[in-house]
Length: 112
Image 1 (spheres, rainbow, N blue to C red):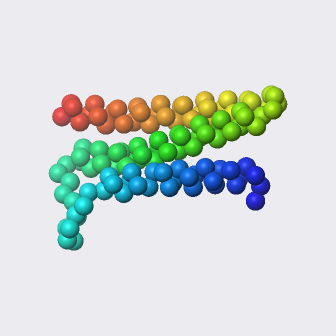
Image 2: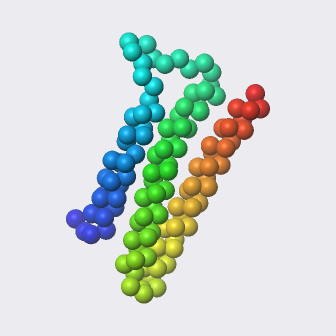
């Protein structure tokens, strides 16, 4: 296992440990065997997007940490600095796309 793979695995493991309590606390307690009621499609989409948002935020943080490590270990190498810069750019693009997706759902729920 090379160092880069090990680093990525460690970062994702630490983030998983940090994010899992939030995901578990977001689940509503439901005694019995009845599934939680979903009144309509916008409510269902809102619940799914809320859960996905947690995952997207964790991935974005992991990408920014990975880019930071790339910058710190570049030691002046232009190739490594460019790779770190590209990682930051793609992480920002991913976050913007996620925010737009979440915003579209919110806007559509106000239209109805």
